[in-house]
View: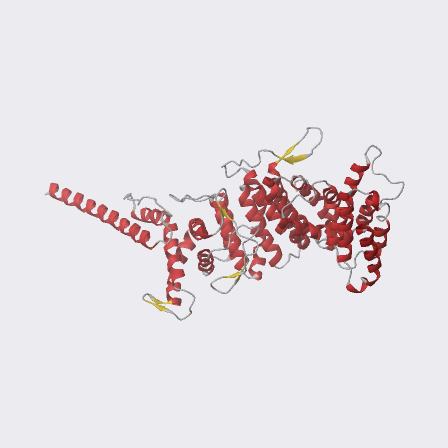
Length: 550
């Protein structure tokens, strides 16, 4: 009898074990069928039968990315019609059931849920980015600058292409994921910020997840778009946990994660109610300064010192060959320059009030040390960094208090012999830079005009021949013509006589190239004249035409 009871117990335990295994396999198969993203998770089913409750909890948490992916597909399938009905019920009822399913998981296992959401965030982004230009080297999708504004499924505004051209908010499934998570009442924004810090600091183990970016980057990308969708009053309640996250960012985060964190901090600064306590404002400025310094170091990771005596930086010759290590900052140097180009000027303008603007200059001077070397390199392989740096200078030029940090360098770049060796789409940035430079600093145009002067006793260099001197003057005339071209109508009307008188001397002794450059400068000068002022100039034009053709 005892032997029979033992056999029955053994057979019953084996049957319960096989039933538990088959139940887990059924759950795995169902989730595999309804998951919109293939092979998000390939972790095996846990069949440990020591304790059923921890076993079930571990199994569900290990399959949480697949569960989120399946629920996201169901959420997106309900569409945007408010009163649409399906086999499972109305749209509102279906989404309410999804929220009720996720709420207890979020309440008890918030870090695991956020980690699973981040895995799904990247997975659906990779699937949807197959139709756009994808930068496979760092896993970041790149979009064109001319992309139009998008609106989410709930009608909320979404910025086009994210920050610095990085496509963090471009997919409809990603926006649906943000919408689904934002309806969880057990996950308010201040709890989400604290959870993001926890996940970034100690990421939960997600078995079988295939990621091209670290989990911390995906978490911060999701958080960045979540913040974009949040109302400003909610952002104002989260300053303290955000500053805590920002203090640890430059120390512990990878380079791409620091760029996303800077973009998130900028979103808070631009949209949240401003801080009132001076202590809090000073702390925000310190945190922002450290993040900007760290991003500036990432931007300058492709530079090297030319000599050990003087810290003259230049672009590395082997900067094109990037390593596959995610912690290699040189992979993200252009991305860092693009983020700084889009965020730096408006961020500092809001962060420092009028009486504190002088504090910006030393910070900008240090950042410019990592920007100017890229602008001195006109090779084709450096054009992406050249364009980002030109965009950064164009943004800074709109704020007059920043001029002390870049005026001298920009003037030297303008007078450089290779100043115009750039792609056509970069030239508008330099038109803005030169326009603001000459508008805010009246001495620049006079200084350039004096260098072009052709008075009798003037010579640019005693050791130069006349031909080389005319070549140099022709280059200066091109720059003078570009400065006039960048100006507003009638801005230099009072300098027109000086331009004419200083260049009409000894026209017959000039080189042909010099003469063509002079005529081009005249044409540009007249282009900036209104029609009513052309009457006085006709005699000069006719006289010059007669001199040239006869």
